[in-house]
Length: 338
Image (cartoon, rainbow, N blue to C red; front, top):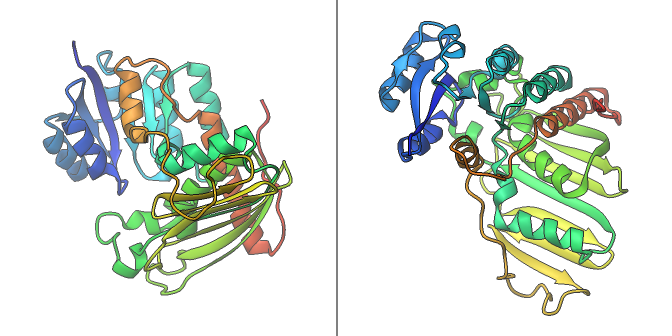
């Protein structure tokens, strides 16, 4: 079978090395060209991938052999790159978050949807067995009416300075769209909205601890009210030495928490769900979100991809959390309605 031809457009994101390793391990896709606005960075990733550097991004858009692109640029470059990719009919993986805020994210989503190309972003946590299981149990009624959901996505990036020198743009909100809370919180926010639906109104408390990156935020908490009446809280930060309990969900008929990937589950509606020991009957993990995109462009049917509009909804909700934190008020996310 002939390998599907790809291009890497921007290699600035901290996840680029991991994506390159995944590309190197596959035989059904190949990277033909690499472009980045920093030529040295483009050359580095081209060498790693056995690809050629493109003199301009236009050389990728005009290459009919390239079926799909991987956009790992700075977030403030996403809109121009996704617009050009869509106009060229290229399928695209765009690293999260999609937009700096809601407005640019929805412009991108419209352009992508109108082009009819495949889209994916890096929300890999949907495929974790614990999250799949909890979503199934919500839909089957095992929790009854869900009243509370808490998620925490934290690590030690600022404590250990993971960003210097290659990835420091991620600590500049003008380029990244946010600091630590948005960087990690977008993953948790995606799961919360995947489980419970739209966030109706939000607020937050977002701060720095070390001030390692100037006024870039390093941790925070959000409160979320969902359309279905549930209340959520979201923790995210780069100044945490541990993060063992990542999800807590409570309802009128059940309760569960996730500790180091294991689910402790209590439900009146499910035999054996007493919460005393980890629940073992979990779904199989999905491939990583990036692998799912590669599967889709290589021809696999019915792959579970994140819709561009879903990604835009997360950008809009995160923007509202930051607005709420600055104003000390509840904010209604400005979703774009189809």
